Length: 161
Image 1 (cartoon, rainbow, N blue to C red):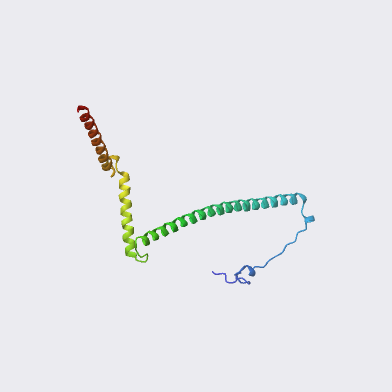
Image 2 (cartoon, rainbow, N blue to C red):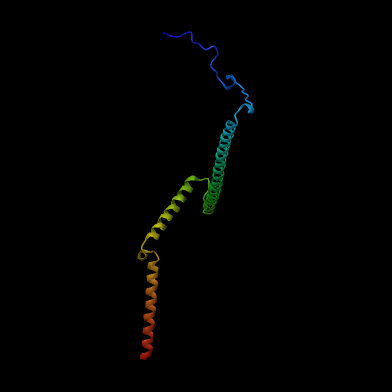
């Protein structure tokens, strides 16, 4: 059985303006002093809680602002370094006679530079006996040894005369 006779006489409120607002007035002299004390205590606690929450929020926002500012400074420095790097690479490309707008030439140049970097990294990881300059050092050492040997032979020859 459907109760069709229970229908609202007022439309369902759609916005805050549709609600009926009621103003109540209570005089302080009508409130018992103990209730007034309790009301002041609760009001003070609510105000303190609200102030503490807002102060904590302000402190968190200040820390967030400082962190964001520091991050922005780091990003600016990083951007400046990247811009300087790009400028120096453009200067190198122009210096080598390549057109900066020629993508194939730039890619080839970058590939060559990357290969050079890979080769240098491999050399850095080589043991000292495999260092590319070791052959020059050994050759120089053998030349010095040969010169010493020639000098000693020359001295002996001069002594025997």
